[in-house]
Structures are given as structure tokens and as C-alpha cells.
Image (cartoon, rainbow, N blue to C red; front, side):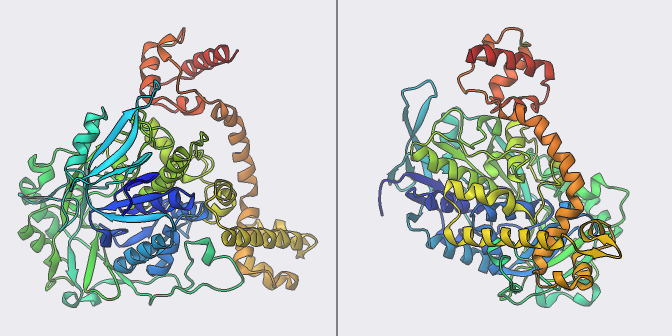
Length: 614
């Protein structure tokens, strides 16, 4: 084992894996420190990747050269495109995973990175040294709990739910960030000593049941798509139809009932969230069954999805009944669900509280403002979900590699460029009071940010920073040429006397019908045709959104130097001075998105910056 690296990544979850992969691919020497290397890439909660808005982020990570899309394509056991009843702008790819094979696949991909070493251990301390500038101290080394000292230029903290993790099942409390795994205790104190303001959040997980004990005939069958769509563009490019390598399975849909709700109401005093045992905030958009019963008292039932956790395991994940109620109450609830009367519980649901860092203390690069070379990614920034974590891991990994190499060009994605850009911008301008989850509604430019065009938006950028290799680049350019040829082939084609492109704009038409009507278009790959169809159908809307983006581009392009002293900005309200100093916006556009900031405040700041430049 070496004792000196460019970058140390702390934690091997989804953020840590992407951070280590990206940084190593960019030439940095990377140590990935994990308390259990066999758990790298583990799915702690639901055995699935993607969903509405989340699936778009996975596609973006892939288009930039990340690993999550490749891993889920090789470990997926059911693929579904969600929201097909609506327009392609809000379609969301989702895949059920064999969670054990997924972790193995992540570890396999990481093992192909030449300058990446996985080190077992727990990081107990991060050493800093004076940086010689007003920016404060900089990272110098990390210390493991066994006393090992590893010098580095950067550290990326991706500890998930493990920072002082505390699990709750009813009145029972156990230290840990995941069942059977210890909490990371020392690092929270280290971050506090650095002057970082810490918070506390909560998440939860449902019971797992034994497959053989379930009567699946009482549930509604939920099959996957007949023609699965891959997450990775490497599996989409080309004139062949991709087939998942693993056997595909079904999920099942059921529901709670009023008898279950009555039991929950009778036992709320034993629920940690209601007894006062847990004081931290949980995810509003993925609530526990206790929260659902209290907040939606008028509803007679709530959906339950039974999801296999793998092909070679008896574990069934009960999506929809996340809970921290006592075990005896969970037993009662489960056995009142039709089909679960004889269900055997393999693992009870629980809630976990963990430390996080309020993200007003990080820049858009995910580097902390107080300590140079210290980056944070994943749930430590107040987010929830594998996909949000992976997106942050990639951003942190790229920026840490640039920092370690002495490059002073930040990797920052705009809101009109990627859901990843929306995620990071929301974190640094609107700090979450609950675990942050991405939705399509958060993106004002979602017509641009579709799952189908992530490569068109981001692969050239990935190539420019060095993440996209020659093979992906060649395939991307070949696909671009195919689309250009398809668009050219449309010219001159007519259907019922109407130009083919105008005919395709109609809501009741599609590329399949067009290619059947126009034989000249039949040689074009159906996936390429689907891309052309979406572009043509959305053309008018996209032009309108382009104009909106152009209008805001001037504000987004006006960058604010870190050295600005807001206290000296003449004419700026005191509240605005305080908020700008706290949030340190990256641009005038970002400054305007800070809660409580007015256009007049930003105008005053713009005048100050102009004078400063002159």
C-alpha cells in the first residue's frame, strides 16, 4: 500500500464510486477508503436505479463517462420506461437490480482503473495545513482509525448515512449506517473542528420478506418493458437491439388497507418519529408508512410494490411501507396485507439518523469554502438517492482531479445543461431542510433535459475534460452522423401530399408509421428514428426555451470572484450582504436564485462588479 496519493475518497457508496472512477480516469492517483471493500457499490435501500428525473441523471452520468449506467445495464433484472403516457421530456428510465450483482459490477469496473487503489479502513481524521492565502487551510493528509497516515492533496468525503449513524426500530436503537455495519464516529468531530456547520437528517427502509412465504396470486403482476432500453449509451449505439444479460423478472403490486392504518394510528406513540426519539427531518417525498397514514388520513390505501432483490436470493423488498415501528407492529401490518398472511420477515424496517453538512458551505464544484481541497458528495450534502449521490460524486471527482493537477478551471454544469446542474445549483442556493430528491418539476428547462439526448448535451463536454474515451467518442460521432443522414433523408419525402417532417409533428403519428409509409426511410435504425421524431415534435417548444436560455445567459455568464467583499458593496441591503456572504454565489444568475434576494440586489451587485473590473 502506498502512503501518498493525489486524492483520497472516503466512502465506497454510489458517490464514492463515481468520484474515484472519474478522478482516476483523469490521471489522478486515487485511494478509495472503505470500511468494507466488499460493500462498495452496495444498494442500502431499494434495489433499483433510475425513475422520474433520477433516470435522466443516470443517463447524464453515463454520457459524461461515468460508471452507473454500465453497472445497472449489466445487473438489471427488470427495465421500465416510466411516464410513457406523457411526453418524452418527462420519460424516466428505471431498472430493478440484482443488488448483489450490481455491487460486484461496480467493483469490477473500478478494478479496471489503473491509478485507483481500494484501502480497507475507517478515516478518523483529515489533516490540514495553512495554504498561505486568505482561502484558509488546505488538505494535507487523512488518518485511519488504526493510525495509518496517508498524505494527499484532496479528500472527497462520501460517507452516506454512516456519519454517527443511529438506526431505530421502535424503542430499539443501534449504532450503524446500515444493518450489520458500524457507524463512522470520528469524522464528524473532525469536520466540526474545521468549522463546518453540521446537521442531522433521517431516512428509512422497509421490511424484507422471504419469497417462499408470499402468495403472489393476491398481487397484481408488474412486468417490465417488452423491449428494454439500456441506460448506457454504449449499449444503445449501433444497429443492433440490446438485450439485458441477466434473466428478467416481474414485480408485484398490492396495497395497504384501513385495518393496517388503524394499527399504525394506535401505535404512533411507539414510532420513533412521533415519540420524540428521532428529532431529525426525514424525506417528504419518500415518507414512512406512519407519515402517509398521518398526512393523508383521508386515503383508504397506499400502494405496496414487492420487488425481488436479486435472482439468487429469497429477499423481497416491500417498497411503499418504509417504517421504524417496533417489530411486533410490523408483523401485524404485514400479515394484514392480502397475500402476506403467512409472510416471513427476513429483516425488519428501520430508520437511520446521520450527520450531514449544510451545503451553503460548499461551492458549485462541491469543494468546501473553509478548507481548500476538501470536497463533499452524496448524502453528506443533504441529498437522498443513489442517482443524486452518483451525480455529485462525478462532479466532485472531476473537480478534485483538476485541483490536484493545479488546473484552475472549474467543472460546473449549468441548469440548462443537465439535471446534475439543477441538483448542485439547488443545493448551494436553496439548502435542503429535508433530504433532497430530484424531480422533473425542479428543472425549468426540462424540454432540453430529456433522457434521450443526454449524450448530445454532455458527451462533447466529457471528451473535453478527458472522461470520454476513444471508443465512446467514436460511437457518439457515428450516432450523430446517423441522425444527420436521417434528417437529410426526410427532405423531399411526403405523406398524403404533406412534407414528412410536418406529418411527423402530429401527435397521432410516429417514426414507425412514417418508415412504413416511406420505404426510403426504412433502412434508418429505429432508435435513430425515435431521436429524429422527438426533435421534430419538440422543435417549436425547444426554440422557445432556447430564447429563454439566451436571455438568462448573460446573467449566468457574469461570474462573481470569490474575493468579493460584500460588506463593501455600496447600496446593497444588509440582508443581501449577509446572504451573499453566506452563499457566495458563482454568478449573477445564481445570486438571483437565492431565497430573499431581489432583482434590485443583483443590479447593485452587477454595478459593483463592473466598477471593480474597471
